[in-house]
Amino acid sequence: QKEVEQDPGPLSVPEGAIVSLNCTYSNSAFQYFMWYRQYSRKGPELLMYTYSSGNKEDGRFTAQVDKSSKYISLFIRDSQPSDSATYLCAMSEDSSASKIIFGSGTRLSIRP
Amino acid sequence: DAEITQSPRHKITETGRQVTLACHQTWNHNNMFWYRQDLGHGLRLIHYSYGVQDTNKGEVSDGYSVSRSNTEDLPLTLESAASSQTSVYFCASSDPGRETQYFGPGTRLLVL
Image (cartoon, rainbow over all chains, first blue to last red; front, top):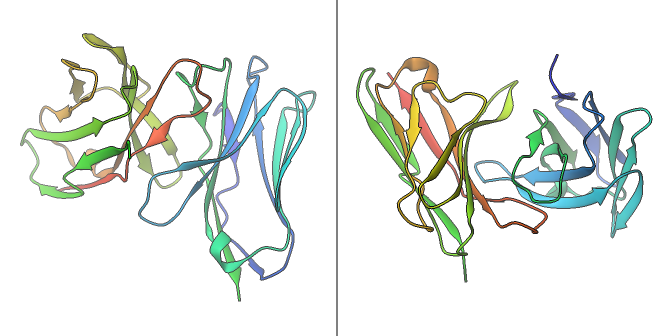
């Protein structure tokens, strides 16, 4: 069993829809949770970063962590075609960014 | 602006040949990483380094080696390329206390 499980998609939704992306994990020592966005033929870039359980909002993006269920989510409101990308969840046990475990990524397409 | 670069961006080689992929960062980060990205597997860690002269094996290190002679560079060498090493390779860097790894643009390697 992988430490981090993520549905690969692809997921296709119409512009303006609310998108929900999810990951589950097995390691209860994970404390730091991240979402990276990766455009086609580019490297991943950090989108959201949260510590422990709870919600964090940044513009149209909300990251949610439920440590009791070992489940994290990323919500995108008012989705735009420019949000079309692969989204990778990632997590680590400490804040040093020295050992990050990545999910396999969900490919998202927003239809105009 | 500080950045992380990879070269070449695309490479075709034959099985059995030695191949070296370059990674150069100008942030003066201590930590550097090499990942490979394959469909269904996400990002898998090959090797990493926490500083000059320090190298460590990651999850999928067989057939790969790295050396760290200065802060800026971490070249990845495929000793004898195999078709199973056809992949997209990403280099990343981070510093202790920073919350993320910064990724390069990737190198697409095809081993025939």
